[in-house]
Amino acid sequence: MKPLSKSKLIAFRQCPKRLWLEVHRPELREDSPGTCASFQVGYQVGDIAKRLYDPAGQGAEIDVALMGYQVAFERSAELLARSRLPIFEAGFSAAGALAFADVMLPDSVGGWRMVEIKSSTSVKDYHRDDSAIQAYIAKSAGVRLSSVSLACIDNSWVYPGHADYRGLLKETDLTAEAFARAAEVEGWISKAHEVVAQPSEPIIATGDQCGTPFECGYCTYCNSAKSQPEFPLHWFPNSGALRSRMAKEGINDMRGVADDLLSAKQQTVKRATLSNAVYFDAPGAAADLASHGFPALFLDFETIQFAIPIWKGTRPYQQIPFQFSLHTLCATGKLVHTAFLDLSGHDPSEYFARSLIEACGTSGPIFVYNAGFESTRIRELAERFAILAEPLLAILPRIVDLLPVARNRYYHPSQQGSWSIKAVLPAAVPGLSYESLVGVRDGSMAMEAFVEALAPDISADRKAEIHRQLHAYCRLDTFAMVRLWQFFNGRNDPPLSDDY
Image 1 (cartoon, rainbow, N blue to C red):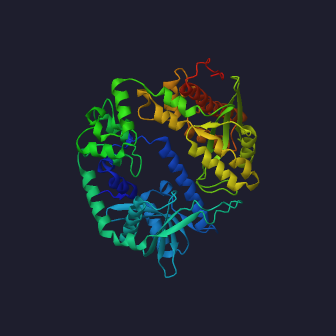
Image 2: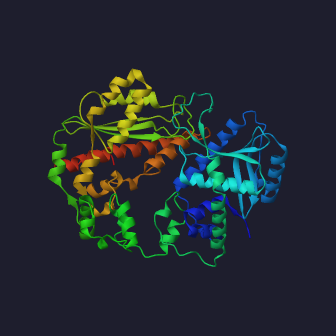
Image 3: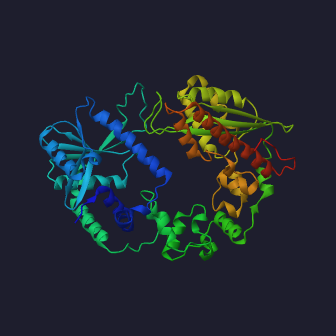
């Protein structure tokens, strides 16, 4: 019986079919860009953990890729028996399973303290399973384990600069819970081996487990094996509870859901979808915007967040704005564009704030799409830079959100349940969409491009190309709002042009 790794046991906990596929059909796995990015963050946090738990650099690290499993286990056992220094990635194999511990620290009585490092900011249920599995395998392998802790990122911690990351990680002691679940873990291992031994994959329908607690890399495969509904239930907004209820009744298409089970918004979506007709409350949309005069400003931010802060005074996962686009529409119909983008590698925050204050001026409504985002970033900037707080906070009362107008007044079947600007724009303003953009077409791509631009070895040509792509993307975001504002207002003046 080949031992199962901890990651495969966690896969089993999520879905037995996922475990079977991980073992027998790994080539079918397709990890999303978001999943791959989370792996990279995990590696970065792991590297910082080594510096924090072994500041003198005297500890040992087990490299299973270099050593191979058997040598790695033997070397780990040797170090755990004789060393009193930190050990990273110590390996254990026992009871039909194997695992590698992120950090093993010697305790004061000759035993070992295990610390698992996570890039999340709080302890999740699957972390508890993870720790219980780690503890069970280590103890079964004969390790004198005195405690088990989970170290998560403390997102309230502020980076003091100078590569000093003391305080980044915050431990939670899970010893009692992990040790108490030994019988439970033993049962998981036994059942997981039974699943792996099956000649064919378990028959399990797709469901909530496909994305919880992780996005499963086999979703495409599993969905391809079943007939897809013409009008899937996830096109209903806020449909989590509804989909769970319908799944129990074997219903996965809008046509099978009675109207009395739907909210007014869901009924609107259903009618528009099934009739392939646009819902547009034009008078209501125009009334929503009627009180807002000129100049009309249209604003959008792009931000970056680092699990491990790189700029002094910032927190883990804090969203730092590095770019804005602002279109200003005058009563005469003149449209002016202003932009800010900092790819210098320095903290862009203060320069961003000063540029934003100057660009916004002191009059006119400022239209955004999802006001909570820009408003929160502005408040954060005001907290960080007291000298700029007054003019920054003066921007907030001027902000007008276009998203509720779109959500309450308009729906096109092509939106497929989404009111993101990328879904609404091509429906409401045919011929204008994000698909024509090169390189950067959404917020996650903008963040990836920004990180690439900060790389020390990037060429000047590539950095200039990223600058152009980011500029074009953010500019389209605000020009899209101008065109949507024009559409929702029912204005008959000629279509505005911004070289798109």
